[in-house]
Length: 224
Image (cartoon, rainbow, N blue to C red):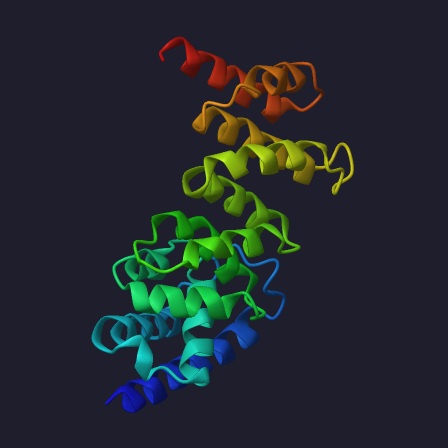
């Protein structure tokens, strides 16, 4: 039975890929915001993916099923429904989380980095957050840092300070601004003694959104 739904899932994935190539050839893994992909072919692929997850054990998955599920998750990056369903299926979440790190699916990686904090299995899967922190993709790194604040607050402070100072992205770019915004929120989340220092740096910076986030956190501090 699992092989049958696996074949059906693969057929639906291939049909969606053909539709996507015909209608949106400009879309790639790294410029996909998910808003373009909703159509009958997407709905069919989504339904087959959910059917597999809900009705069959992760042990039934072969490499093709894993790849097809990761592709479906990556395309579902606007609504993030499949990744939410996976939070109720630890075996599937663990299998796909591990597999996505070596996959080409950028938009699956950041969803797993974001969702890893909610994993409830009793293995060491959450330690993969450190692998997601090293993925060379800004949004994945940012979501991993956010999760780290819940998984390991002590390590989150160290990584947050490193993210602020590491100079990976050029000054004046959105990447450095949004990474530093996340740093502020992580330091606030873990109640870091370093928060005040970085709030002041943010307030004295030339980044509009970084400043506004610092102001929001100042207001939150007044209520705590």
